[in-house]
Length: 260
Length: 250
Figure 1: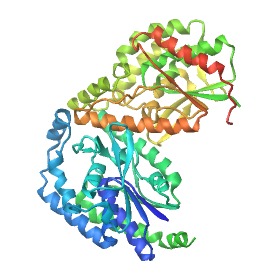
Figure 2: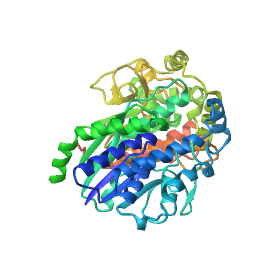
Figure 3: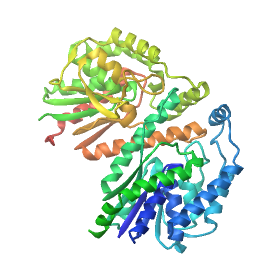
Figure 4: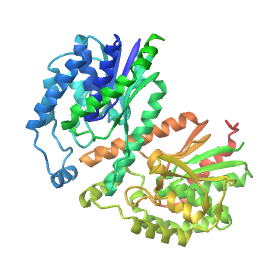
């Protein structure tokens, strides 16, 4: 059983579509996909359509449509809102994005088994969602702390799955995957000028540490160097195209791996 | 090979680690290697310099520590969230000179100048933010403590070094000892969610470190303001340690 784990990372998630494209070019597909945050969006779209080009088309079209309607907040306003409000964006503001992507589709209607990982704030643990409506699960998994409003799912407030499970390989193992492929990013340490930026840089180091631990379960890794931040959604095409070059460079090695 | 005792150090309450050293000394237990991070390195260095007066020095420096390191003087996420909220409000820039000056004044005043060599049983850990690695520092105790203490709320990295405790929680070891203070709290502001997420990550990293250790001992604090009572809590943990019959993994 081939499992594919997709890392959290906003626009960087477009890289995962390159991983799926190379799967197709090798005449293969994952039997089960696990994703956190943007990884869950790509995973859910692929589980729905089983077609990487369709995933790219739907995801990028919806992102562009959403960006057009999105009011860009100046930095001082954002900083003020961070200290006054529970989040920068209310759930109602961005729920429409996920509704547009997934409508009322349920996990049971998917063509490929899917695991969506979110962070349960009550138990301080990752939670694996494999049933119900996709829109709710993926929405919960994408709740970047402080940026998007946390919503309730099964009685607890949820946050981004990437908090504790940046690339959910362990969840795949638990669901019986015996060959695990991870699709991840290589990022440079972010710069910092303020103490808050320093804290965020340190938080990214912690994420890397957790990622390294999760990669213990990975048998093959697609690793994409990226130089964008998670919210640079206007660079989605560039992210995908750069990733495709890397993924195709690994194609023969990947074919060998799949044959083993 | 010596048994590796690893110590957290994200709060000033780790000055109470003196209690562990005293408990081990009372039972004449030696041949241990101490891997410290952040504030737990202070009592180890003071003990190494002169164990007879170590307790007095720690009690005397406590009030200075409360003032200088006020953001990490209470084991409470609610209190810490207020500090973060303030940082966001002020958007305070990292000030290397000021950080160096404040830390330098503290270590010059309280920390004895001794050499920490590779052969010592004290291993001072700090995180090198330029190379992204946990390093064990050697050299003059005052200089290495300057690098081992900075935490991101209030101090810039010193020569690219930060307290390891504020990155990975605790160094690897056979026995890990830490104050478990990340109790869930009700987030209200956006900054609270950021704090909750980063603390959850630290807890998970500590959990991973604990799994690789033979045992993990948690220090439960009832009064976090009184250094004598904190030392006593660590002393109890030290006593627990003396009763254990460990075989080093190495």
